[in-house]
Amino acid sequence: MRPVSVWAFCLRLVLSITVAAGIVFGSVRLPHVNATTVALILVLVIVGLAAAFGWAEALAAALTAGFSFSYWLLSPPNNFGVFEPQHFVALIAFLLTAIGAGQLSALAKRRSLEALARRNEMEQVFRLGGALLEQQSMTGALRAAAEKIVEIFGVSGAAVHYCAAHTTLHAGREGTLIPDLKLCEAAEAAGLLSQPESNLLFLPLRFGEQRLGSIGIKGAIPEVLALAIADRTASGLARMIATEETRRVYAKRKEEQLRASVLDALAHEIKTPLSTIKIAVTTLRSPCSASGLDRAELLQIIDQEVERLNLWVDEALDTAMGEDEDLRVKTEPQDVAKVIAETVEECAPILRNRHVELRGARALPAAELDTGMVKHILRQLLDNAVKYSPEATPVIVSSEVNCGSIVISVVDNGIGIPEQERSQVFDHGYRGAQARSLAEGNGLGLASAKCITEALGGAIWVTAGPSGGAAFHLSFPLAHGPATHGMNA
Image 1 (cartoon, rainbow, N blue to C red):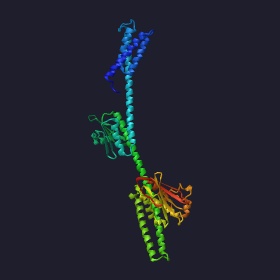
Image 2: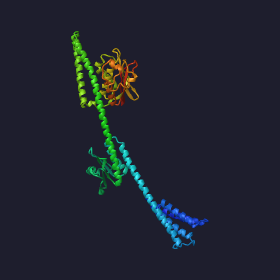
Image 3: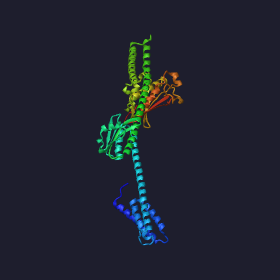
Image 4: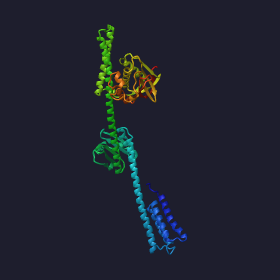
């Protein structure tokens, strides 16, 4: 409550005196108005003035009412006679009414102001908690706590110490005056520590049995409010710790899933060079083997496939042992057409001279991709297209922009996938009845492709191809970069 100026106080006194005198003076001019009625009206007016202004104004009105009432309304009229019993009783009654009502009014106002102050303090504390909830990292939460304590509670400085990271963040013009050593002591203390000579308060931050750190506040602030600030700050930091732990566990689980998927994809890919080597060796051992030139070509194929196997085995070992840095998803703006072309070239042994038709717009924007991971997926889709479609039919690989994403499609002219099975083909170990009858497999390839795609922030799904085969689609978000050349139709 703001203090009343002298002029305002004088004006209220004059108003109170005028109202009391005016009621008595006016009642004298009215016919058939007795003294009892006027006395009750004056009592009510004095109570109202006490509630509206305070006990000083009510006391002035009571004195005015007592003398006016005695002078005009009590017999004999126009005579003060204050020391006569009835005059004296009237004056004392008005005075007691004014003093009592004033005290009650002051008490009610004081309690109202205290309740309002407590409500404002709690609102400020909840504002602090809300600021902490908006943060996404522990460093951001510590910085926000220090800055918001200064901003919201009007202190000259604040510091928040976090024990686990040995980190202290200061805020305010005098925040750096809060000693770090004292903050470390406060983190181990049982309760509030104060330095009245320096206007400093130190409070431990605890959440249950956890000792999180401490806060230091420089400035005039009630201890009860400081304790509420510490409690809210500790709750916010504990929530941030729990959130970061949840993120860490989730990231670890996703990393393990990705590692398993990459291993599945590698295991699937290793079968292709093994099959090629097997065919080449069988041909060389055949009694009807070809000329020396053909034998040299077959030996070169075996050498290339062994080298490819060696690289993939090394990659599989690194992945299994968690030492493959490339396993970490690193999406960057990439030329989609270039990634597709490189993958098709690398998959020549898989394709077995199958014609691959590349389709796409003349110019496509870049997409956010991890090249190595996307190549794993495309190799799997190309291998499936070759396995489950006739040898004379082409495989179509296309790319386009659709709904803010780059969509890559691999389409074959094979047996297709029944609609009721399309939601299951990406399940781990699942193979459709038709697929089992046409080619060997373990049902890991598409499951690993789905996991890798989702780890890249993309999506994968299957539809029916234009000629009845299967059309697998991959979508990845567009990158904020210049357009790149697409594939020629």
